[in-house]
Length: 158
Image (cartoon, rainbow, N blue to C red; front, side, top):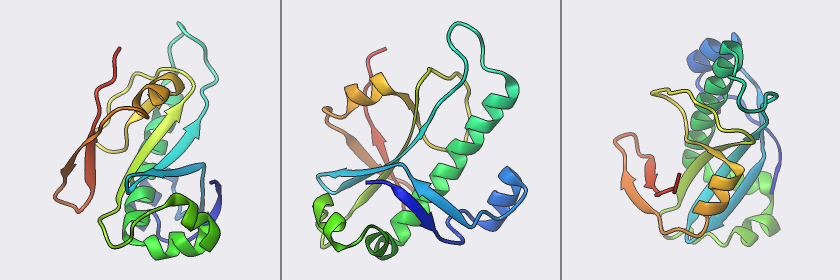
């Protein structure tokens, strides 16, 4: 499922101002999918460079911003599942097969077309399309975080 989601506050105002110089009033959901009460929320981005040329500093900064924004988008979704249900509609919500009487783990991923090499203490994991393909069939280990989020540990062969 995908689409545009109009919702103020999905990224806290101070974070949005730091990243983009303004409070963003809408976002889009590129992909949402689920398996075993794990809700994958994926943001898909494309880089303009091709290997082996390095990513420019301005592009690295932009992808860091995407990663941080997506973390807060997923955190908002985890705390506002009823808003997400209303947004996607009853029929699409049923297709996700989420058991609402059990914990629902929201797992954000930023999927990119080329391997990026930057490190940030904030944000979500970046995966290439091939890494994503590899992890969808793996067993995931979950660890609860202090802020109420869940961290998944998945081994990717490199």
